[in-house]
Amino acid sequence: MLPSEHRLRRREDFATAVRRGRRAGRPLLVVHFRSGATDPHVPGESTPPTRAGFVVSKAVGGAVVRNKVKRRLRHLMRTRVAQLTPGSLVVVRALPGAGDADHAQLARDLDAALERLTGGGAR
Image (cartoon, rainbow, N blue to C red; front, side, top):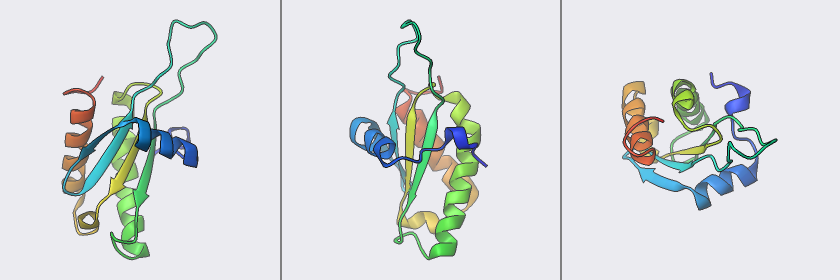
């Protein structure tokens, strides 16, 4: 499970990541990524943790399927959050095929999207 300090919860944070961040699409999901914008050299400014949020619409499936997809995505992001730049915002939007995909397929698409957005590798 993704710890609560790494979860996006506010509507404004989701909007910031989607509108001002970069996007990478894969067959099962779309990842929006906004890199941390704080300057570590400014006194008194601490870097917030990387936070991730998930959007799974009714197009993915019924409530049981949507919750299963969200649980899988949260589990996958738990190990990947530490590899991203501190202060970053990540929104993972599941596409309709994600409901039928297994854990390995979701992991492959998530890794490919994050690799593309972070410039070819984790930072």
